Length: 254
Image (cartoon, rainbow, N blue to C red; front, side, top):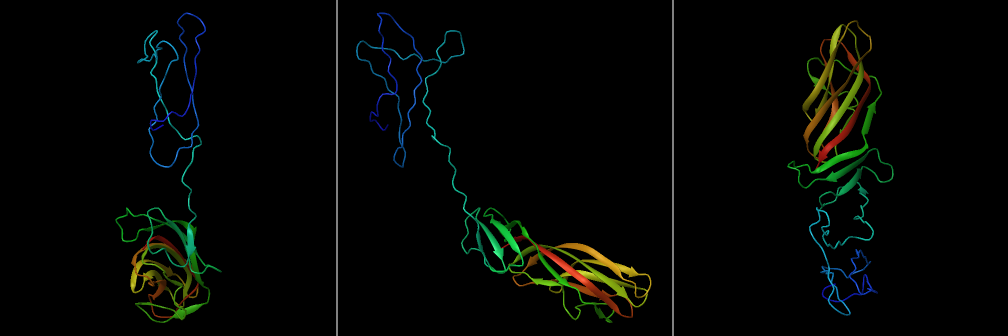
């Protein structure tokens, strides 16, 4: 090793006055110092010159090649670091780093696991790889008489003020009725922008109907963007909703 003899690996004694052909295979376990090293197999003889015979093999009576192989005695792998955990993402992440984002470390309402992808061409390089969705509900029966435009009800939403800039998948549904034969609509919004909507015609007044679920990929959210359901009354009279809910899951964030 590095030009220094580290000892014999194999010894062959010829006890007869004749030639002997003996195959040799030897191994040794070493613990070298950290850094690069050069390993060389060398031979020596106590009397007249001996021979090390090697060849290309592949034919009858052809000698196989001589070789040296250096490998780890025990296969090892770099330890996998546990993801960090907290209400903010790491400020200076490394490629492949993982973090679990929560809104509370003592009683979280969601747990989102992200992996940082430095090669991503998106501005949102923390990519969602698993976890529990954020779920919000409004069960109260709330109504509007406003016709022809989207409005918030007495209890806006259900909604989420998203914690990070990025893209999110949103799923929502609600029960609705109208005091007359009328259409009712709800939409998934990011602040004042609607991303998806669904409608139903109430065939007879005061009959409950279920709208949705409807889904949308809500893109380009700023941190703190208001992702929520809003409501539309298509005809004169009173439109009402209850059992409203949304599920929010990130796609990628910054």
